[in-house]
Length: 220
Ligand SMILES: C[S@@+](CC[C@H](N)C(=O)[O-])C[C@H]1O[C@@H](n2cnc3c(N)ncnc32)[C@H](O)[C@@H]1O
Image 1 (cartoon, rainbow, N blue to C red):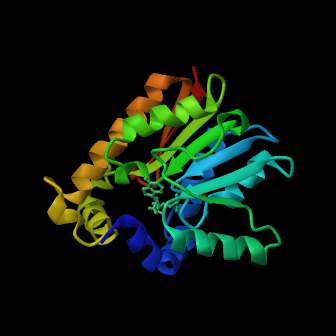
Image 2 (cartoon, protein in one colour):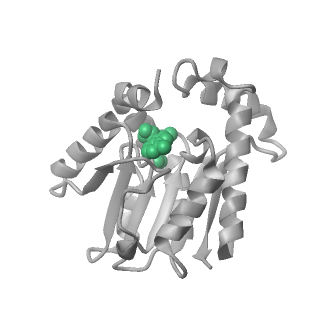
């Protein structure tokens, strides 16, 4: 099953997990705090899903700022739009491919991706494209999950691997040369490495037992 069909099918279930799952508030707050977009900024989130990061990022950019969510799965965008309408502002939600940014560069101050690097075949290339989009001085941030190396938490790595497998579109495991969690860990590492290469003042934080990885910096 393709990723857009999968995420469309599980959109409401994913939304519940994305908002109320264990540790998600800490993860999303850490992304917004570390990305630290200026008040009034336009922030684009690639692979926005049901836009669970929207309130966290809107709090940072304030009423003069703009959140733009981009995703290739119509089902998650529908849920994000419905929630926006219920709150009185449908928001800016765009159907598009994170690896081919569909937004105009002169309007973007910050870009981020949360839990999406592990789904991209070449996450480093995507991060470089996002850096080009915001340009020098723009902010770039990533939030991802990967196996932990923290003592006391490593015992939970098998559960993390099962979680990654269960959350992958059916057929993913068979199509990969390694387990979905191993592939995700490698892609996450590549994405965060690419961010360090294109940014200065990079801040890297691990949260939620070392499973959550957050990087952010200013594009050089
Ligand atoms: C695990 S969800 C994360 C959603 C959201 N960022 C969050 O924090 O809850 C991954 C999302 O990335 C989207 N996605 C994956 N690859 C994409 C791509 N190449 N272009 C656009 N969206 C993509 C999927 O449709 C899905 O909604």
